[in-house]
Image (tube, rainbow, N blue to C red):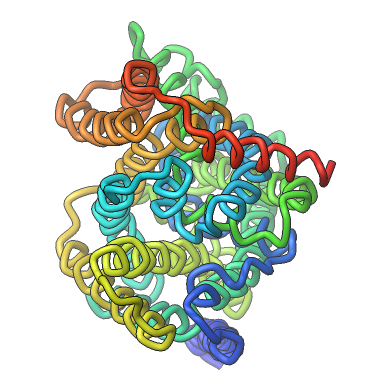
Length: 496
């Protein structure tokens, strides 16, 4: 059987499995809350793997290994920052957010939570945050489409456009019909495939190079700073410091990612956040470690072959097709698609909720029927996908570049206000609004300045300072807010 047939067979099995999961989720989706939040009935292991898989998009298996391959271990600070950020997110945000969203009028989206938590009668918070969701997620979704196109272009010699369209089509089908449950359960399958691929490929590559010692020696000889977390002599002045600080600051982004924190809201209760955290962090440690090792090992592997990659972000794709049996390589390639599509689908669901739950419902005076809401939700998924697809036709940035900008946008726009809303009674509507807008604007401005410091860090700090200052200036006691604040704390405590 020709090698290409094995590859296509593996992908066919993968796609068929996704569509089957989407169909089963469709049969379980009865109303709007099911479509958007799975009826708040996710087991901790599903929430953990789904949060991880929806977080780790194509950048994990393409962007991060590519950065390590091109620059060395110093780029590993991104992985360290993300691991720390994910742990803190599960530890301090997950249980509180699950409880507070239930206490505060059963909020099922991040924008509706802001409105209900702060008793915003003007709907300004909900509308502004929904607009922020749509802006940054359209960019984020576009990055997934770019990754899909590059994947098929590099792995199968397919035209970039056709590859992108295939990924979009399959993802849209199971997301349109399966909704949140479809996205979550396919995330579990994709998360498992991803972590297996990130163990198999580096092990096979190390064996091919000649063992751990030979690989380390080869990597170090090619560039003395490759195995150093500070980059040795590769970087002059404060360049290494900026890379380290920027890498660690990626962790701040976790607190504001709607497609991740919505998994916390979907847990069966706040007490299950603890077991979900343990599962999620274990998965993430293995996945990030595998991605970093793949990039480093790729340096030695391709040097031995006398080959230099034209696109460093394809390092895992190339190693898997060279080293593994075509069918196994096909499954690894399917895991790459899993990384891309799991995030892609989750982001489409959040965009749909922003359009329907946070914009349409606010502006519609008469309550729409559940059937109408589900139909509108599916239509919104399609609209956002089409806009993102138009942006992805001619990408002008790397996959990691697109993801890093969107990650910064959400982290700086929502992260501080989520933390303050959960742990500070005195947050006000003007404070939250001023913080979100200042954070989002700072991301755009700082990015335009093209400095070596990742825009997330200054934008996060600006948001935090502005939100606290404006809230202190506008604070008025509110008995209802105080009651809910105490009730959410009590609910979390009751599960300890």
